Length: 196
Length: 262
Image 1 (tube, rainbow over the protein chains, first blue to last red):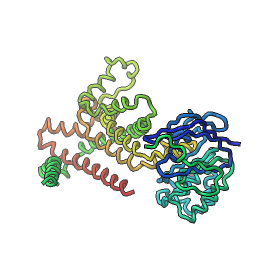
Image 2 (image 1 turned 45 degrees about the vertical axis):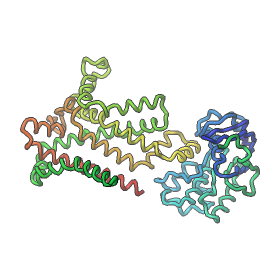
Image 3 (image 1 turned 60 degrees about the vertical axis):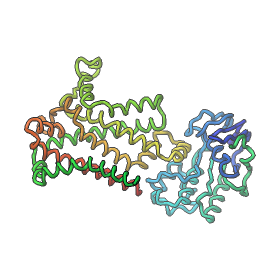
């Protein structure tokens, strides 16, 4: 049973300062971090992923991961901007993540695009491929930064259902609005230490 | 008025660059140019220069690309000092480069016991080494700039999927920036071909295949014609080499345009 613990976590990034985060998330939980732009939703995810520095401690399955490098941390971070290796095919992108990524992408109706070079896709489709890669990774914690951005309404429903059906992982999602069907909610505006 | 001033300065600079080229082509004429390209000695010289420059460029690509990535991602300690060291050949006079290389492999060098099995004087190794030394700063600087501008989010994403730096370098950066790498490699090839100062010292006359005859690198060949036979003898060869250099420049320009459109 995977557990992600944040103990007294705070982050400073430019003029933004957020904290203190004290949470314990369990396997199969889907957590929504919501709030207005510029309040630190992405900053929180970047800190959990270990991409930026933070104060406090983060534990994954009771092991401290503060000093783990990104590739060994067991936490996958899918950025808000659709980021794929453009010059290779969609399928080759999916293969970077693992075998189940292609299956997830198929469930999202992307099979017809597998042979195409990633740069030929729209931002919305790129985003779906990126989320498929994240969900298909072996990491127990998945951080999805604005996964619904760029995605059409019809595909958003599909994406939401795929995220909800995902088992065995802890998933944190950011959004500027409060959405339904999540196990826990973090209102980022409640964690402003200093926002100049 | 102010905008006009910028126009005047721009055209003045273009004139400074282009006028000598026009004059050279005017003096040589098509027949002189064709005669240079038909001279077997010149073609042999050109062939040697291209082989040396291609080897130097390959060394740049295989060594310089990972080094530029390591510097760009600050993987090595003192990366800014190392970067300054890599750029230093830009400001070292090339005759000095030639003398330094010659001395490094000479019996008086403190490193001679280690390097005595390597003799780079008047052979393809020395030619390529000198070309690499002077062209590597252009390659490292341009590739590092390309990597600096690469999508950091994409790298974080792939890394967080459990992939290490080498995977990102090989499977993400190389395919994403293949066009830029080829363009920059051509740029350093052009720089290697045009080298004169260091190779006149370390590779003045090179033993070259197929018959191990002595061949002069093309810039030395042109200088030799000028020095021994006078200006008129060197003109055709100079125009021929200028044509090749311009073709490489246009090719680099075309690749840059294609990259920008993609």
